[in-house]
Length: 50
Image (tube, helix red, strand yellow):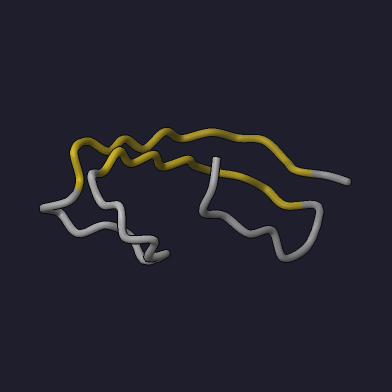
Protein backbone atom coordinates (compact mmCIF):
# COMPACT_ATOMS: atom_id res chain seq x y z
CA UNK A 1 0.00 0.00 0.00
CA UNK A 2 1.34 3.42 -0.88
CA UNK A 3 0.08 6.95 -0.96
CA UNK A 4 -0.73 7.68 2.66
CA UNK A 5 0.80 9.60 5.57
CA UNK A 6 0.17 9.42 9.29
CA UNK A 7 0.88 12.71 11.02
CA UNK A 8 0.21 11.63 14.60
CA UNK A 9 -0.84 8.52 16.44
CA UNK A 10 -3.34 7.26 17.41
CA UNK A 11 -5.14 7.78 14.09
CA UNK A 12 -8.75 6.72 13.38
CA UNK A 13 -9.19 5.26 9.90
CA UNK A 14 -12.69 5.65 8.46
CA UNK A 15 -12.22 4.63 4.83
CA UNK A 16 -9.88 3.12 2.24
CA UNK A 17 -9.74 3.99 -1.45
CA UNK A 18 -7.95 1.85 -4.04
CA UNK A 19 -7.24 2.76 -7.65
CA UNK A 20 -5.84 0.71 -10.51
CA UNK A 21 -4.39 2.96 -13.19
CA UNK A 22 -2.25 2.78 -16.31
CA UNK A 23 0.01 5.76 -15.63
CA UNK A 24 3.75 5.08 -15.38
CA UNK A 25 5.35 8.52 -15.12
CA UNK A 26 6.29 8.66 -11.42
CA UNK A 27 3.97 11.54 -10.48
CA UNK A 28 2.50 11.50 -6.97
CA UNK A 29 -0.74 13.26 -7.93
CA UNK A 30 -3.85 11.11 -8.32
CA UNK A 31 -4.33 9.72 -11.84
CA UNK A 32 -6.75 11.46 -14.18
CA UNK A 33 -10.07 9.77 -15.05
CA UNK A 34 -8.66 8.75 -18.44
CA UNK A 35 -5.73 6.97 -16.71
CA UNK A 36 -7.93 5.16 -14.17
CA UNK A 37 -8.99 1.59 -14.96
CA UNK A 38 -11.05 0.94 -11.81
CA UNK A 39 -11.45 2.43 -8.34
CA UNK A 40 -13.22 1.36 -5.16
CA UNK A 41 -13.90 2.90 -1.77
CA UNK A 42 -14.63 0.91 1.40
CA UNK A 43 -15.87 2.21 4.73
CA UNK A 44 -13.76 0.82 7.58
CA UNK A 45 -13.34 1.50 11.26
CA UNK A 46 -10.00 0.90 12.96
CA UNK A 47 -7.27 2.76 14.77
CA UNK A 48 -3.53 2.92 14.07
CA UNK A 49 -1.43 2.98 17.25
CA UNK A 50 2.22 2.79 18.12
